[in-house]
Length: 228
Image (cartoon, rainbow, N blue to C red; front, side):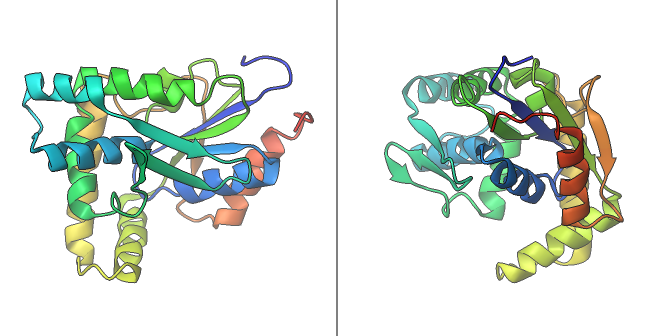
């Protein structure tokens, strides 16, 4: 447990399972901080692109990790930004290319270890909802509440395709489904911190649930925590 007067909630799951939207709302309703840990990997991928470092270039990755200044800014009103060397890159990291490379860099043990330290540091001594893919299994193993959101592949592909269309991207449903499936395989089979539910996580299938319904399920389980 995280300690009296402080609560740590982890929400993990594959892409388009609803974890990001749900985590933000839960944090806002509880009046505590929210952290999107995927954005930290995206920011490293952006830094690597700017420095010309590719996945697989181990020595260059190690040097980059020693000098990367990635800072997640988790505000009490649940707003969230991430900076790179003091520069707000929250919008710059939301591209398909960055997302794909973030997944590839996340396979590297050293990357997960160093970025995990950044994530853990920003969850220390504060109440937080941490959303990602290994929050409950690695970064916050002693979290008070752990959730793992999932959904059928077809539904997740539909959701992601709708998001991309709204953002002006032209990916088809078939392309989106293939990309999600590839990311799922890569994340669930990786050697270091594979995507899977923590043994003590509550698993919620969001396929036929609205966002508000998922939020309600989570809040009902954490209802006894009254220190916020």
